[in-house]
Each structure stands twice: as C-alpha cells, then as structure tokens.
Image (cartoon, rainbow, N blue to C red; front, side, top):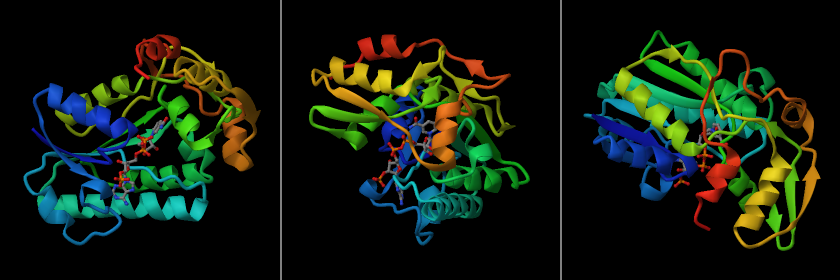
Length: 248
Ligand SMILES: NC(=O)c1ccc[n+]([C@@H]2O[C@H](COP(=O)([O-])OP(=O)(O)OC[C@H]3O[C@@H](n4cnc5c(N)ncnc54)[C@H](OP(=O)(O)O)[C@@H]3O)[C@@H](O)[C@H]2O)c1
C-alpha cells in the first residue's frame, strides 16, 4: 500500500518510514525538509493522490497553548481536507496518553488534534501512547548544556519508538479503527534517571538537575496523569534494554 508519513523525518517518523519499508509498503514523506509545509494547504492534494493511508506524526517544539493549537489544528485540518479530496481512505494519528484531559500548553495542541479526529464520521484511527524511550534523547538535545543537564520532573511509562512504529503500520494495514486502546511500555520510570542514563551511555555524563515544568502540563508530568491507564496494552522493551541496544 502507499503510505504518506507526515513528519516522516522526525524521531518517530523515521522509524515509521523504516517499518513501512520493511513491510513492503511504498512511502511518501511530508515534511518541510522534504519540500512540504503542512501548514500550507496549497498543493497538498496532488501529493496525496494515490495514497491509501496518511500517518500523521508531525510535531512542533512550542510550549505555547495558542501556537500548539494553531499548529496541530491547521496541520490536521489540511491533511484531512486534502486527503478527502485526493481519495485517501484512512488517516492515522498519534497522540499522547493524558493529553486530552490535560489540555494545556503543548498538550492543548494534541487535544485539539484529537477532538478534530473524533468529530469525523469515520476514516481514521487514533492511537495514544506514553513517551518514547527516545524522549530522553530529545531532552538531552533540548535541555542539555555541557556538564549540566536539565530534565523535567516527570513520571512516565515509556515505550520503544520501534514498537510504536510497528503499531502504526499495523493500523495502516488494518483500516480505520477509530479510537484504539492506549499503548505503553513495560514499566514506570522517572525522566531525570532516564536522561542521566542516556548521557552516561552516550559518553558524556552530566550532573542532572531535575526541574519542575510550570503550569498544568508540568503538574500532569509530575503527578502520574501521563502514565498508562486501565486497558492500556503494554509492550515489552524496557528503557534500559533499549538504551543498551543504542549506538551513540
Ligand atoms: N516524543 C514522544 O515521546 C511522543 C510520545 C507520544 C506521542 N508523540 C507524538 O508523536 C508525534 C511525533 O513526535 P516526535 O517526537 O517524533 O516529533 P519530532 O521528532 O519533533 O518530529 C517532528 C516532525 O514534524 C515535521 N514537521 C514540523 N513542522 C512541520 C510542518 N509545518 N510541515 C511539515 N512537517 C512538519 C518535522 O519535519 P521538518 O522539521 O522537516 O518539517 C519532523 O519530521 C507528535 O505528534 C507527538 O505529539 C510523541
């Protein structure tokens, strides 16, 4: 099948493209760095002609509620509208466990994206997962400064990106399922420990300062609101085993 991966150059997007290739699917990557700004609806429809499924794994770095809502709202609406016009039968979106309930800061964007999908008559699958193991590496990139590394105070039940990518491809192959059961990793972790272990494994150990993220989003990160709830499907690869298999 032909799969368009929106955000196919990102952390999870690259893994989705690799999993699609592995399964023998044809992929089209939609990202600014490959010539498609998804906030701009013009010329999107021709790029989606012949595509069976769109997998949306785009993201933005903003923590502003207004900017996050604008980004995810615009990208989702552009993809849905152009997809309908081009005859795409299935839109698969990836969200975050707890984002809809927290509905603040970056998560307000994810909540807007979820609400837009949930209001569709069909033709979509919505998967929510916990943070990826790769989130620790993202924190190192975004909050690391030399020998001192900041890490958010955060409880998570992280999952390997490859296990998320496999599930997104399974959904693409199965057809629209609407809201599906959440997906999470095997055990609870504290983000500062993950970040410290990641720095050590990559040969640049650091003093890790655990910092509270302000606002409702930060509170949810600290109080367990982002952990896997009842009914979540748990995958098997632990953070430590994932880290041991990484090449730094
Ligand atoms: N990270 C996690 O732990 C986690 C956990 C659960 C769910 N999620 C969800 O998974 C999704 C992907 O997250 P990620 O961490 O993999 O993101 P990421 O690494 O930041 O990648 C973001 C992708 O979006 C693309 N993009 C950004 N702005 C764009 C635009 N205007 N037009 C087209 N493409 C654009 C980027 O490519 P260009 O820069 O080239 O445009 C990149 O390919 C997000 O929706 C996130 O909420 C993440």
